[in-house]
Image (cartoon, rainbow, N blue to C red; front, side, top):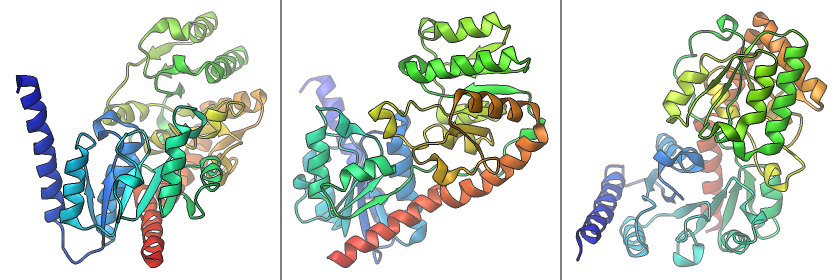
Length: 364
C-alpha cells in the first residue's frame, strides 16, 4: 500500500470513528436519524445549512442524529447504519454518488433537495430515482417542490435556513455608511443578474445617490469588467473581496447598508433558487431588495421587512430610498430580524424537518 493510499485509508477510518463517537455520545432512548450530506461543511453550500446545522438543532428537539462524513465509503455507511439502527435516513442532495435510496434497503429515506438539478440532463435520472425511492422529499422552494411532486406524493417546502446571531450586529443599520452590495459568490458566472446590477448602479449614480459598492467572490476582475467600468464612469467607489470563510463574510456584511438579490427568473435554473444570499444579509442586518417573484413574496412584505422589485425603476427607487433614509432602513431591518428568527432560522427549519420525520414514522 502506498503512502497516499495508507493516508486515505486512515482518514476514512478516522472519520468513521468520529461518526460512531457522535452517535454514542447521545441518549439512546430517542428516535434516530442518520444524515448523509453531499459535501463537507467547510465547502459551504447547502450541506452545512440543511444537513449539519439542521441535524445539530434536531438534537435539541429530542432526536438522536448522526451526520456521516461524505468521504465515508459504502461499506462504512452500511456499518454505521447497522450499528445505529436509525428510524430513517436523510439524503442531502443527489450530488454524492452514494446518496441513493436503493443502497440502503430497509431504512426509510427523506430526500432533501434545494436546487433545480433536475434541469441538468446529467442529473435528472438521479434526482428522479431519489424522489421515487424516498418516503418523503423536502424541497428548498415551490419550484423544486412542484417538480418533485411528480414522483413523490409527500413533498414539503423547506426553505434553507441560517443560524441567527445571539446579538444583532454592530453598527446598527441606521448608523452604517451608504454601502451597497451584490454579495453573489463568483459574480462573473451570473451575466443576466450582473447586467441588472450594472443598470442599478448607473441609475442610482445618475440620480445623484452617493454610495459605495462592494462585491464578493471576485477571482478575476475581467469577469466583472462592465460593473467596474460603470462604477468608474460615475465615480462610485468599489471594493472587491475574494471568497471569504462564512464567518468573515458575515462580519464584512455587517458594514453594509443595502443588499441586492437579483434573480434572472427567465432562466429555469434560477427559478429553482430561493433565498440564497438573503440569509447572509439577514444575519448581518442588511436591508434587502429582492425580486417580487419565486418564494420571495412569501417572506418579504413590501416596505415592512424588505423591498420587492418588479421593474428596473423599482430596483433603483427602492435601493435609493434605503441608502438615503437611515431611519426607514432601521425600521425595515427591525421587522426583518423578527421574521428571520421566526421563519428562516435553523430552529424553524429543524422544527419543520421534525414534522416531516414524524410523518414518515407514522407511515411505518
